[in-house]
Image (cartoon, rainbow, N blue to C red; front, side):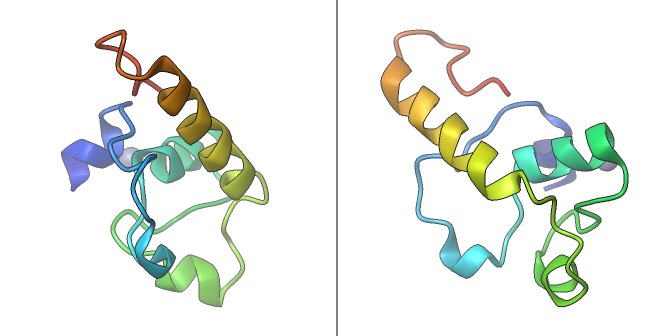
Length: 81
Ligand SMILES: [Zn+2]
């Protein structure tokens, strides 16, 4: 999970986000980018409880998923954040 969080590749963008329990690579990428959001590496529980999820996360996750879907795996880097 640590490798996934720091990989720079989103592997879950096209998959159903199980009740938003598990964080994504994009979630942790935004933590490093914005510092004051997205503190959980594995689970989203604490960020949800303390309202520390990036306000941009859901929109960015949807946008990334759409981009990956559009690329339709034509490029081997289509999951790149
Ligand atoms: Zn990190």
